[in-house]
Each structure stands twice: as structure tokens, then as C-alpha cells.
Length: 301
Image (cartoon, rainbow, N blue to C red):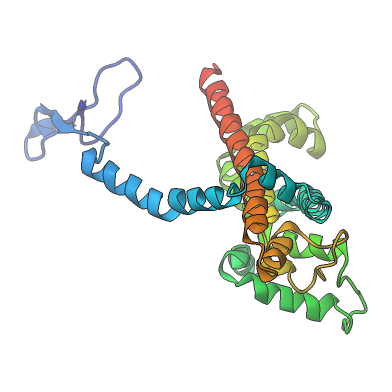
């Protein structure tokens, strides 16, 4: 679209376009208006390339997985995902992932608060460490956790082959999601509103609950949802510390691996599709929630 703009300056709303004066003449010269064109599109070729890449990387593999899971019809798919061991693994996966998401809501928000509002030695190092789970191979995390909390724990804490061990492992790999979701919102938060609440006698908890939490809630929920979606499909960080005990600590990703090892690809594909469905629904709900929050924000006076 064509848009009239100026090189510098900004007038009050409704006062007309801002102008810039040409240098070199008394008073800066005559006002000069600059026209430029902003399209914001990449054209048909860009769309075609993007859709082709998306299809090759995401859609085709998912389609092949779905077709494989239904090779024996809906009945075969249903039998695979409702087998007792498969259901037990799914219950463990979802239950532990919910606990991990709730832990991240509390601790991730607290860490984001400390990184934004407090100054302390080594803050930059701590801020960089938050992203370490994104870069570190998750199997390395499992080895470290097994060394720390396994049978030969140097601190005499034994979490190997327990659900708390799963929680610790999944909390490690999902730590950045809530922190990085909340940080930018907290940076942009209006401190004057908090100061006004404090001047009216509100304590710190009341200020946080009444003033900041409504602003942070969409980011917290988004981060928690992403942490949950990541946790339900995690494999590397739990493969050693989890113990892979059926009906107790075996998660769905480990059961899928087991089905592949015993040459049951259809069962593995069916359980994979079930996990994908859970993750997709989670991300879809997050998208709906984000759009609704954005509409409310835009409609607010």
C-alpha cells in the first residue's frame, strides 16, 4: 500500500503529518514530504517456496506417519492406542507434564522477575544459562541427572526410576519456555502503575496480584503450554533417569521406542499420532487464547 510519511518528527494525534525542514536555509527551509511504498508481501513465488518447504519438512512426514498408523483401519489404530501399557504410559506422560508445567509457571515467573527487576553479580551468566537446555543434547542432561540423583548419588538423593526423577528431568529441558515468555512482558510493564498502587497502600503481593498478574497471565499461560507440549514428547532427558518401568515411570516416547524395537511399527505410529494430537490441541488452544487476549487488549480504552 502507498503511505505518506516523513523523515523525522512526530506531531500530536490528529494534527496532520510530521515534516522535516531542509537544511541550509534560514529556519531550516521549507517542509519536505517523503513518499514511500510498503507492500509487506513476498509475492506468489515466496508463498510457493514457503509452502513447499513446510510441506517437505512438516506436512509430508506427518501425513506418512498418519497413514502408517491407520494401515489396519480405525480398529487397529484404536487397539494400539488403548492397549493397557500404552494407556498407562500416556497417563504417566500427561500427568508428569502437567506437574512440570505448573512448576514452570511458578519458578519460571520468579526467575524472569529476578532477571528483570534485580541486579546481582553474574546476572549475564545466569541469563545465558537459561537457554542452555535449548542447546544441550537432552541425553547429556539425563546422564548428568543420573550421576547426581542415581544409585551412586554424591548427595544421597536417589530419584532414579521414580516419577520425581521424571519431573526433574522434564523441568530441566522446559525451563526456558516460561522465563523467555514472561521476560519481555515484564520489561515492558508500566512501573508507574505499580508505584501508584504502592502509594495507595498496596503491599507487594497485592500489587503483583492486582496490577502485574493480569498483564503477565497471557505470557505465563503461553509459556506453560509450550512447556507442556515439549514435555509430552521428550525422550532423551528421561531415558536414563526415568528407568522405563512399565505402568510406573515409562513415558509414551519410551513405549514408542519399545514398539519399534519389537517390530510393531503400526503401534508406534499410532501412539505417535496420539501424542501429536495432544500437542496440536495444546498449541491450538494457546493460539486461540493469544488471539482472544490480543482482541481484548485492542478493545480496551
